[in-house]
Image (tube, rainbow, N blue to C red; front, side, top):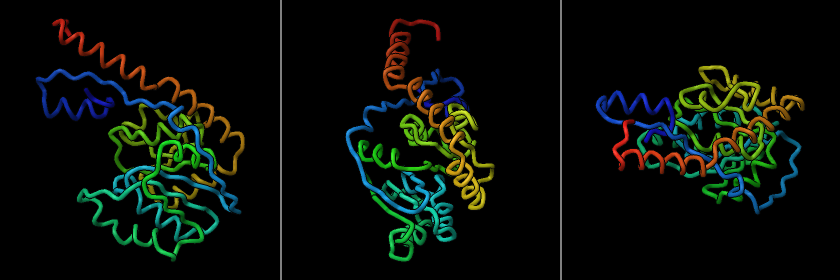
Length: 228
């Protein structure tokens, strides 16, 4: 089972004789309810959640925080033990230090309801990814109704549409493009409303119940010997 068309092609390249069915990951917005947080900054709030790894553009967020003190960057997620974490060590240490305390809030790993609480407080959710076999965090932010900024790379293009349910950072993602995108979305009430409503709609279409049902149907086809 592949979680995206992009990942399906990767699997087929490695296993050309295998049977592959694409079933998208899903989201259940109710999982992100039940918590509230109080934030009263005089800054734009930009929220990120996910693993703190290089492919997710953490270094770009760190540099954006160094350059622009008018944005509060709230970052939720744990550091990965994967090899691509090593080059990020200095950036992550600085994000955690007092050097950027005026405009960076590092939360570590937090629950889904708390993620939802911060998403509801944020002006934008930011995911400047270099690679994305799917990336559930982007879909979660969209489903929660937070105006979502992401790159137009890999599987993200399969469920995010520029100016419809998300705002795409021009590629390749750069600090300049990330900051421009934050100001473009946060400063345009009509755009924020449009991509917020579009994100919620897409989240409703891509629920875990749909994913589970498609998985059951795939297993039935295999068990009953149906042609796939």
